[in-house]
Structure formats: structure tokens, C-alpha cells
Image (cartoon, rainbow, N blue to C red; front, side, top):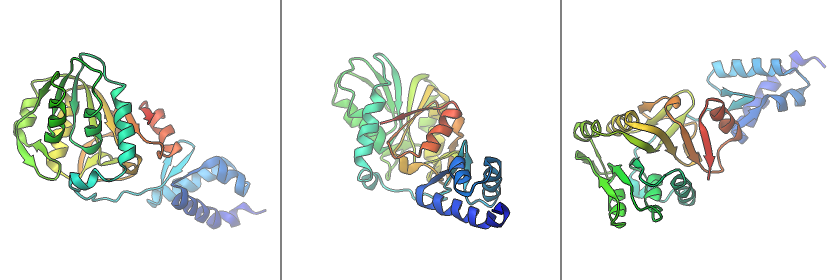
Length: 259
């Protein structure tokens, strides 16, 4: 068999499978077309240069930037992937220790963390989300710190130079960061510039950054850049994460917890 004659067919197959499954492995293409893995990697390299896929260790994943992710109101976000967010929230609580100082970013997944802190007696918690602050207040036992700022209606969060300046006075054990969009190349992003700036400040004062988000947020991008992937220490997500994505993240030194 002349493998060169099958080059267009092979590349079409790669794109078709990535479209269907979200990822593909080098060894699978190599076996199907009886070509070397080096040949398949060259295919992937060429297709990546054409912005048709993203290479990862052992294969490639789908590019689905959705470049301008919509700034969706929190009331609508709460209805999406709710069960997954509940599981992620409970898994995140297992990383918290008694007497920790933590930051809970605004978001529907971080809200689930706030709902599951019953076992703790002493926590200091900073949050810029009013809905999260109200949940924390019900415990009657935590030190809850809320920065001032402008109220952003869609996220029910406080943003702007006032809370950013306020946060400079603190240093925290853990930041639980809610994420709108995550991409290996483009990093973490969000539709809103003020939220992005606030998140950057949170990252700068946290000893450990834990990103909590459901798997639908992978391979997406939004308008405002927050941070590169290497600023994240741990990711907690659901079982929908692509195995190749998980493997690549772990190769980069990021701990991945599947809730």
C-alpha cells in the first residue's frame, strides 16, 4: 500500500474523528492506516498550523475557541450543568483545612463550595460575590470579608479599583477560581474586563490557585485574559474532561481532580 496516496484520506479521517470525539490518539491513526507514528505527528503538526486542531501529548484535541464567550447572567448560569457543579463544589471542600484563609471567587460553582462548609469551625473567607457572602453568613461562625466596589449585575459581584486595592492587604492559603473559558494555549479568560482584573489580583495574593469549573469550559476562549495555564495549581472538574486534555494538564504539572 502506498501510504503517500492515503495522506489526504488520513488527514480527513483525523479531522472527522476530532469533530466527532473531541480528540484523537496518534497510535490509533497509525494502526488504522499502517503508517509510522512519526508520519501521523507530521499530519497533526500541519493541521495545527492551519488552526484545525491543537496537538497534545499522544495526539490532538479539538479547537473550539468560541472566541467571544457571552457574558451570561448568573441566574442562567445556575441552570447549566448544575449536577456537575454540585459534585465539583463538594470535591473542592476536601482541599480546605481548618483555620484556612480562602478566597471564593464569584460564580455558580464557587457558590456550591460555600454551601458545603458545615464541618468547619474556623475559616477566614474573602469573597467579592454578594450571593456567596449571604450563604456564608448563615453559618454564624466564619470570618467573612467583603471588599467594596461596583456591583456588577450579571455576576452579583463587586469589581473595580476599590476591591482590587483592598485585596493587596491580604495573603491567602487558597483561591477557588471560577472559570468561564479555559484553553491550553490562550489560558484562562472571561467575557468581562473588570472581572479579569479582579481575578488577576486574587491570583497574586493566593498561595495555591484551584480552578473549579465543569468540562464544558475546556477549549474555549473569552474576550478578557486572566492568566496563563501555569498559574493554576489544581483543576477540579467533572468526568466529561477529555482524557487527552487531562493527560496534557498533568504533564504540565497541574493536578486534576475529577469529581
